[in-house]
Amino acid sequence: MSTFYNVRKSLIQAFRILFAAMLFVVAIGTVCPDIARAENLPESTQINEFAQSDEARTQTLALMEAVQNDGSPEASTQIAIGYADKVHYLRYDDSGAITNTITDPQDYDWVAPVEVEGRLVGRITIWDNNGSLEVGNFSPDIEEASLLDDDDSTTLISDGFSRAYYSMENSRISPLNEAARAIVPESVQVEQGDIAIRKNAPSGFDDSAGGGSIGVVSSDTAMGTDSSTNIFMLMAVFIVVTAVLALMCRILWRGPNRRNDR
Image 1 (tube, rainbow, N blue to C red):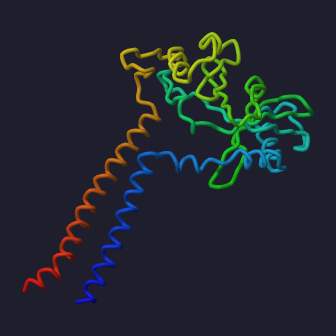
Image 2 (image 1 turned 30 degrees about the vertical axis):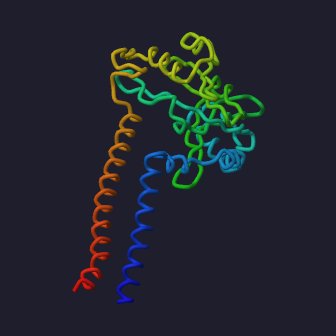
Image 3 (image 1 turned 30 degrees about the horizontal axis):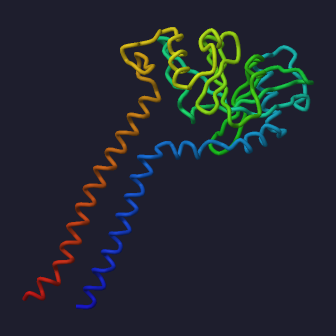
């Protein structure tokens, strides 16, 4: 009889541990659905250490020669890469509707200004390619490069359609050039700025949708829907497994009682 009780006790403890682990997984999936995505983003220090490396300068030189092909420097030692800043690029679909939102804190690229012999010539994007940092592209966009800063608490918002640039910090968005001030005249809450920017999009603004929505399903909305579906499925599996575990515990608990009754 003691052996049966010991086995039963061990199984009940194992079920309790499994139950607690499942609760933890469900809580993480519900509260922090983007935690894995955030952890995959390289840190600012890693990005900037790479930006100052000879490898980054060599890659930048190759991209500059491919893009400009008109008197780019002959040696990568003439290139100076500045501090990498976070930049959120507004993306548009074929209908002219914005497909992402400035309210997503994880939607940004690492971008650094590039100088040649002290002269600003453009900017580069640095990204993580399967665990290895590399220079993704070069653009001779001097205006954007001049607006990059070394403040990790701010994010530069770049609207390629209107050539407007904004600074986002502490849930507020502020215009940085004349094109931006024509859309968002002064510093406002991010949600207000998002609505104003969407109104200026080529496709216009769908007032019937409410809350600054547009008449198309954005990629962020699709990801949010998928995330909600995954959480629902996880909850359903959790309920089924919990019911099975409860039934097994009941059977184990009643087993010796039936023997005693006999």
